[in-house]
Length: 435
Image (cartoon, rainbow, N blue to C red):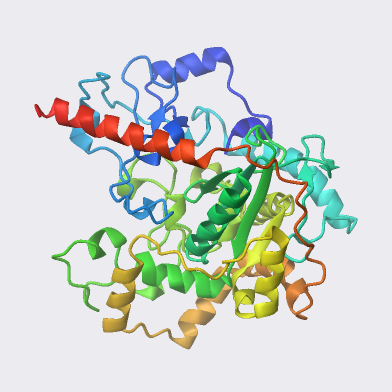
């Protein structure tokens, strides 16, 4: 999320000062779409002892999943001294994906900016003139920076926002198939805030898709997948999951999983991680305003989340995939079959086996507590999806072949470039090791 969207933009002098004070400048390039080679953009190093965040994605099993559950930064000793960039960590500044801002920006400024940006949505809500739910009324219109919809845009890119443990790996697999069918670009976001239509990120006439699953079921599923035993442990051959070494569902009650956090600063156990969310996760993921030190009330985060969600083209409701008529309607919307083909998340097999061997008992009082804690996510889920309750999918239109810029992206060329980049990386690594 960029605070420029909220009218907060550091001056050139402030940016220079941030750099000189060893800021984290987080703005990445992904060469040829290869997340294994994430590098900061030019000019994104602090001038004197800044931080170079090099995220590693150790597994690459070609299953269309980012494998980001095991994504790690460089080890601390590598941070302390990097021979290539001579980087020394002295202090950490607030980091914001796709933008930077100093610690001098106060929570009051953040809240004022949110209210200003969200004023249009609040007025529309009061006047009962909000757009229809993109779950029940998906469309091929394109939201513009001026707040209007364009019904003639030829989309060149699909952006899928992947909500964790809500059928996202399977949805991603299907949307890759859609993109390949029509020859358009496909990108997805999982561990970062939701991209917003009509902003500077929408540079390629983007068709926006996300999905929802009932929040309590999603939260428990997330706990079983990565909260009961961390995926990083489950994939290790010497780790034996037992009830004794498992985290408890009763402590799965913080916005950041089992533990409360007081900031987005720092690394590992000291900093807030968006992907580790346990409660009101849609509100936080979609709104992107959940850094604890910003002190943004959850109700305001919810309003921003809804305003962004209502600008999307399609929201798929995972529970409805049990209805063959709904599946047929979504496949008809894209003109592509295969919606029910399963994707496989990073450690699904290991976590499934661990939970089979150690069955989870969910007490009634624990589920009631989760329901209370997820109040805003439940509100969002029902506001978006209840219009599908009657099983009438007549408002889901059929595929309009004029609305995608067909063959505007060369998948074969992109794959070749990725393979070449990977080979070059392996060669360089071998040479550095004296091979």
